[in-house]
Image 1 (spheres, helix red, strand yellow):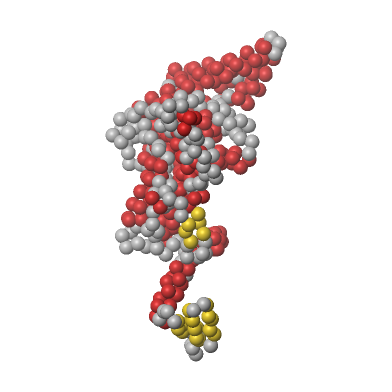
Image 2 (spheres, helix red, strand yellow; image 1 turned 60 degrees about the vertical axis):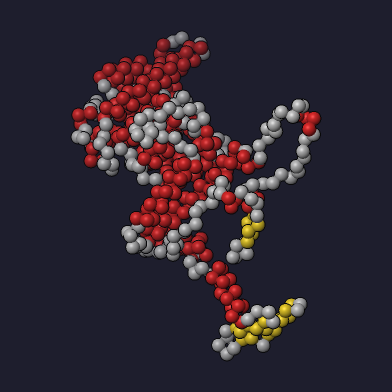
Amino acid sequence: MRSSQHGSDNTITQKTDNSCPQFRSKYMTAEEIENILRMQHAATHGNDPYVDDYYHQARLAKKAAESGSKHRFCPINPKELPSRSRNSSESSHPHLHVDAHGRVSFSCIRRPSPLLEVDPPSSAFGNGTEQVSDKPLEEEPMLAARITIEDALCLLLDVDDIDRLLQFSQPQDGGANLRRKRQILLEGLATSLQLVDPLGKSGNPVGLGPKDDIVFLRLVSLPKGRKLLSRYLKLLFPGGELARIVCMAIFRHLRFLFGGLPSDSGATETITYLAKTVSACVNGMDLNALSACLAAVVCSSEQPPLRPLGSNAGDGASVILKSVLERATQLLTDPRAATSCTAPNPALWQASFDAFFDLLTKYCVSKYDSIVQSLYAQNQPSTEIVSSEAAKSISKEMPVELLRASLPHTNELQRKLLIDFADQSLPVSGFNALGGSSDRVTPESVKG
């Protein structure tokens, strides 16, 4: 028998032959004590390895995938509680929360309290009509952006849980309820990012204001925000409306996202990975979505960074635009490659491409003129020397890959313009430098 005395309360723990402890107390019955123990055990022993031993289970699942075997890696039950929201009433007041494992989480970390509050003298405001302009710390834009990113990552973890449940379990309704919940979560994230659909719900174009994408830009200005955007895109169906809306926001701000590479290697990796993710998403789009994305580039107030692939300054925008052009070529030559049931609109694509081609050729001509003027300014009047040096500079600065990918979509006038420009700017290698076939993709080749 083992007894412990604490003050005036005497609690006796006695083990029986079957090693089950029996409790007696001065103020509580044995049944009450056992009920408390059962509640504690249920809270700290959920018997769900996915929750209690997540990282070890993830490691086992990874090893099983490498060996070709299967390992059930999903929660036992779907999470019912909504993801954290910084606008929820729970997080609006600082409080101290201790979970069942004894871990302490401070809500005030998300809403830091001021270290020192000093009320300014009334005379500082003159006649008293002026208002204090300082914002609370939790309303500072970049802090709000970081909080939004953390909340969004938690939401994407909930989506991961749903995907794993659909993969490893067989719900009675075939997973319809889980898929509906998944879609609600993804749409909710798009709402949190305040993404605007320029096409509108009715398909009618909606004008964009200069501040419509301000929340989106604040998020993607941070490396973690770009990681969030990449993860979000990978969870979206490439041919869906959400993917189109997100990609149009990216295409509107190609220069902001891919205009340059930061000195930090980690931040550079997030930019490169985002470009690859957007390119992969584009490869699953239909022709109408591609048209909308290309139109977003043309209608943007920012000049896209049109650089050759492999440029030291960053080639993310060119990688994405090249994917758009090549995907459109694939769809126009083989309509069966489309994964969407929406009827293609070749005329819409051609209009978007014509506007983009005009933008591309104007950039190339301007770039060529600046290269030639720079060479003449270096006191090299010889035509042969200028042509040789210009060819070297063009190979480093001209988006030849984009010109090559544009060829299947050009009409006769555009092709002639391209040939004339190639003969002028690339006298050594001629038009072959652009490569490509002379066969043009026509709207008649699409069977709608």
